[in-house]
Length: 174
Ligand code: GDP
Ligand code: MG
Image (cartoon, rainbow, N blue to C red; front, side, top):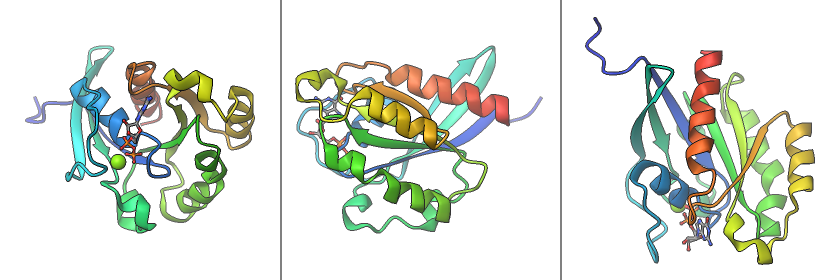
């Protein structure tokens, strides 16, 4: 038996404009928290959560940007060895959706060509302030061959599903 306490280890990296809720998604999934009024930066590079899928222990190393996205200073080292990317926008912020092609160019430039990318529209609890329709996002994700999901870090909607579905896909393609 191996000394490792897991069957699979995957690196998942969150990208997307500042303010879309990346840190809250990671916090919600890894700690079950939605901290009100937290700062933009959590000061750590990554969080770990181990999940069990069909009897296999899957260790997820989840990288958050710790605020670098504000300064457009995310570089190759951040994408290096990522198995999956969670490209996040805010459904109440048109601008965060319009920036997606820029993020895709970064992915193209820096990430592995085998990386799995999931498009996530966050903040669905703010339905009355929606600026990006589901249909638009669906069309965009289909054209880019990305899996697409809407979440609320605040209400814990689809957050577990996001990471577990991703882990399942990573196992299938490992
Ligand atoms: P990041 O810059 O992408 O890491 O975004 P943060 O996680 O720091 O969140 C930015 C702001 O959006 C904070 O004020 C959060 O409280 C808020 N926020 C994040 N996720 C949600 C959500 O699902 N619903 C609502 N209503 N607010 C959210
Ligand atoms: Mg953040």
